[in-house]
Length: 426
Image (cartoon, one colour):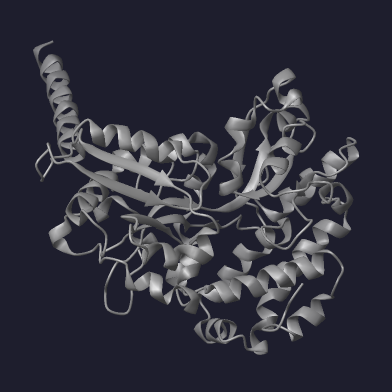
């Protein structure tokens, strides 16, 4: 009995020690005078940002006299440089992966502070390393606060009702689609298809094309240079997409009735007759808030989860990419307190809290604190791809998006888009 008691006490001591260390690691220690009075403004492209405003409240528990404000300027993407050069410039602003290499944002990058400066003491180790993007001079000008991925929202209750399992391979995907068709479901898979931006076609093919280019630097360079020789890299994924459409597993007539790739995608999914809805995590983030907006869901709620789309026998890919990043305006007022707020925000605890409130994927090494995204946590490491680390440019993505949309809607053949890569416009 004494021996057993000793073992139990030792185990408890280890647990409490680990808990204490974790707690100490997460605890924020202020470095400035907590009575400091100043104003900090964050600007971005979200219409509202309750998750960030909750962080403002938490920061004010430490620095009660710091006023924090979030604003969405008109035409954010095109007016950001002007806003940063204004008389009252913001302290922190949204930045995005597609800004890199874009001439329109050269002036914006000139305003960005190097957040890897050790004097700032940012906890960069809390973020998945491959999401951190350093420039040619070794500077970290953007830090991800949310991540995104591509996949399908699955109605778990429909699968259970019909005695089916969520597919994890290409063969299983075809089998469950055929089974749902035979049971009277008009479109086993659906998504937004009315326009090229965030259409279901690009969500389907993009992960496979990233995988094809990841280990082929020569073709990747050609693809980024808009060289038509890179076109064949799209062929296999486009053929898989067309197989799903031609077999009737994706009914485009039904999909075309969805008028936007966010709210309407969610509300259509909540009708309860769609087994798999193709979308991005950015769309999934709005689902919970819209449950009460759906009369059908309110009457007959169901559980749902976000899964990779398996277009091969090895399964689906997890495209791990920043969704929204924060940058600090190095020419702003109150730069010291601005960096203090960033230091407070860039921790496991605060980033995870924001991800939970916003219902997006956290960029931290904790990966998925939201169970809706849990299936992506089971994707093998070799099938987790980081487009920014691989070197996928926004111009490349746009060509893939245009090609998939043109082929999916019948505006062009696979042969045509393959041969015309680099000059594709829907």
